[in-house]
Image 1 (cartoon, rainbow over the protein chains, first blue to last red):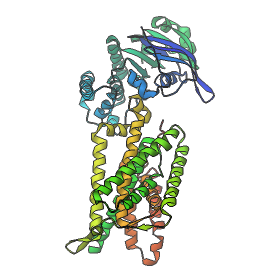
Image 2 (image 1 turned 30 degrees about the horizontal axis):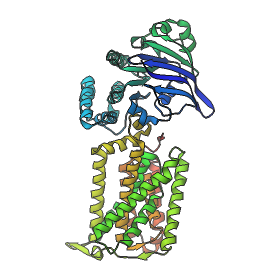
Image 3 (image 1 turned 90 degrees about the horizontal axis):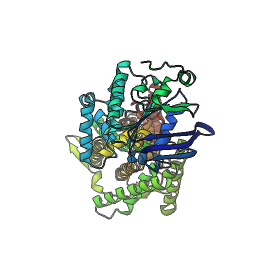
Image 4 (image 1 turned 30 degrees about the vertical axis):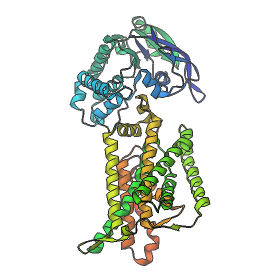
Length: 243
Length: 294
């Protein structure tokens, strides 16, 4: 069953289109990876889905309901959560306070408390540091916090924008282990990555974005095996190369 | 020594009023990146409300003043600022000036431009003797109210869910919305808090001066703005300290300057402000002012 359906969306910043006629579908429980070089329009796509920017044309439907014009608050309440590029941890707030904000869309306090307890179980390092300032965490720990915060809303679709960017290889391993676990739990994932080296571990299908347009799409195994695509659109990153 | 202590109590009392005024400006700036110059008129309307209710039991008059100013602040958000919320900061700033002039001129139309005298509680002017030190009751009340209100707001921001949401929105408004935090609600609460602070400043200022005039609030808003700048735009702690510094420097200069130089007191105050900004261009406390709100 299709959870997210995007049809021919174009997003412009002023007169300049950032993405053009992009279409994609994600089924319930599926993991779709969108890859592309810097400036390909990947982050703009996440902004359009989450209601931060409004497409100039096209349709975005989530579970059969149009997301256009809803805005980020309402989109979050429908079950779309974003782990943004750069993590966007709230400075000046503790780890616990950052996580608490992830429960905003939950119905009541007891479900929020329960979700927090589950989150601390899944991310023990956050439990250890729960009373410390969130910005004192290492990059990898902050990424875990950003993922945990997004998961607290019990999203039906989790969008991760460059989750491995700037992390050490050990931390990238950790983050991809978490993504694999989420996938095995049936979470629907939209994974945005510039570096396709690790996406074969989690992605079912892959879309290659370049200059704001879809250049190729298909099963992960097929796309990731196509060296021509890598050379043309992904800066020649070697297939299956590990960071 | 007695003179020094009395001057210090005066300074802290004036600084406390400025700190509350600055905190109101800082709260809105944190969430909206808006310097709301119309906050001055919130204070002025509070003063006039108090003047109109002067015959009532004082706590009731004070509560009415708070209610009127909070309602005014919420209406300002809804009618003036919400329609331009997605516009650039310059548009919002001009909107705040326009609202300020509109309210000021409405007050001139209704009450005239000349100050009107009134007396809230005459007993507040009487001193309390601590040994040989005479401290006006009003100064003690001002300091107690300011400390109580600042503590209350600090607890509100740290211990309540909406307070934590406000702090988060002040840091990263877009991310807060992506988590489902309702931007409209956070902004409305920030305006309501600004209304409470403006009303309290109005009561304390009216008790000190015993007069109402259409321009009183604007002066306080300007001082509050200067205080938030030297405290660090976007830092609430900085706004409170900035307000306190401006108040203490103002009173100390009044006490220390030779009589022939006292007319230039404001120039000396702003010289201190300039010196602080030369040494710390981002203010005393690092705020979030340089970040863009989305």
